[in-house]
Structures are given as C-alpha cells and as structure tokens.
Length: 316
Image 1: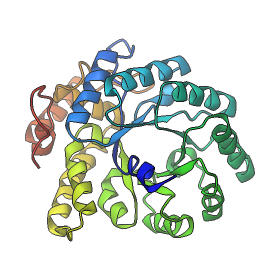
Image 2 (image 1 turned 180 degrees about the vertical axis):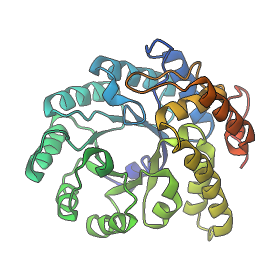
Image 3 (image 1 turned 90 degrees about the vertical axis):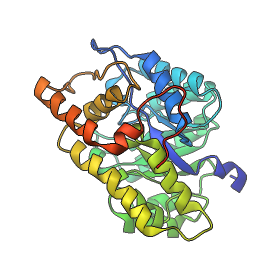
Image 4 (image 1 turned 30 degrees about the vertical axis):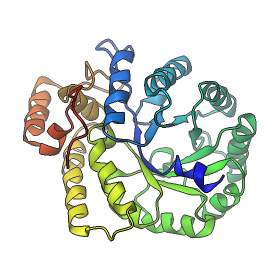
C-alpha cells in the first residue's frame, strides 16, 4: 500500500459503542448522533463492531445493521474499519463480504478464540479472510481477552501478505509493540489499543490508536495525536497533563463495568438517548448512577465533550 493510502489509516479511531434502548434493542438514532458528534470532534475514523461495540453480544444481522448505520451517518467523511471477527472462519468471511459491500476502508478480526487452534491455523484463518475480500485486514491482538498471544515471527510472516494492514495492539507491553515495529517495518501499521498508555504507545512507534474511551473524550486524544505528529518538538508536560486527565476518567471507570460506564457517560453528555446494555452486562443501580453523575459533574474533561449540535470541537 502506498504512503498516500496509508495516510488514511493513521490517526485516532474511536471503537464505537452500540447504543441501545432500555429493552436492549439497538438505538440506531443515537448511534447516528454519536457518529456525527465524533466527526465534529475531529476523529479520524471508526472501528465498528469490536469489543466496545458489544460485537460478540450482537447477532450477525445486528452487526450488519450497525455497520450500515455508521456508514450512512459518516457519509464518506472518515475512515471506517469494520470488525468482522468471529470464532469461525466462515462467518468471519460472511461479515467481511458484507463490510466490503458497504464500502468500508478495511476489515479487522480478533484472533479466533475458545477452541484451541495452532498458530498455523490462525494464520490460515486470516489468509482465508484476506483472500475472500479485497480490503486491507487489521489483526486484532488482545491476549487479555482471547488468551492468545502471537509471536513476533507470526506478525513478520503475516505482514508480508499484500492485504495485511497491521495490528490493533491491545496490550500494555509496549516493548513488544516496539519489537513488532522493528520486525515488520513502517508500512505495517500499529494501533495502540489501551487508552491509558496512549502517549507511551505513540512514542513506542504506533501510527495511531483505536480506543474505547475516545467515545467520551475524542478531541482530547485527537489533539494529543496532532501534537505528537507535528514537526515541532512536542511540549511533553502539556501532553502528560492531557494523558493524566484522561487517566483520571479511566481510573474511575475501572471501578465499574467498562461498557455500561461509557454508555452512561455518553448519556449524561447528551450524545445517546439511553445507557442501555444487553445482558449479561448489567445496568447501574440508583446508588451507582448517583455516584457516576457526581463524578461527571466534577469532571471538566467529560463536560467539555458534552453534545451540543452547533458547537465546534471542545478547546482543550
């Protein structure tokens, strides 16, 4: 892939939540509003149907409808990566073909999990998907969730495939990220996947980030990316302050269940209509909601990112 084409994939990508009505049905109106809000906040693109999007709690048809809503709302203004990963290769390919038909820019798939498969079988899984569609493929590396950690040799070999775009690296091991960069080269893109170490990932060589908390505070991270990417030497103290501001929210979030927390904050920000989640995820109790509302009112960064239809991106 040429440098001009790779440029469309460098930057901050929000791993979108999937808004739902209180009964658990998908709230497509809130999803479209979330997409518009994110674009106005300067996000580079979206990662649709991943862990944050409750992708594995949705049916395949729901995953297709969610992607269609995002593509329609984005209207070609940003880069869209569709997560199509499933346990089985056949269903992964089916979702990849649907994504290709929707005109997305790339697909992504988590490493096959639950069944114990060999490294060769994992490689064959990705190669089968890449042969089935003409889109670039982003590997989703998340050993904390899948229990599968792949070797540097695996990534070096897969990086030689002409349609392998790179890896969404959701691990705190930034040394490993640096090793992947050294082994696979600059045309194999690396995305930081843990928001709390975004700045470290940026200086470890990532080309951008795909993050969950970007739903709540997109412009904070896009401004950090722009500073890191500028030709001028970044003002490290200011960047560290921004990372600390984000980490204050993240540390509070980790006291609760992550996806219900993000949805509740988006609800308080006025971006989505309801903070509903689908079982087995649980909604918050009345006491927990009071705690979250108090934190939101005291959080300058979350309130700066509230939804206001006619307002430009928050100045940070």
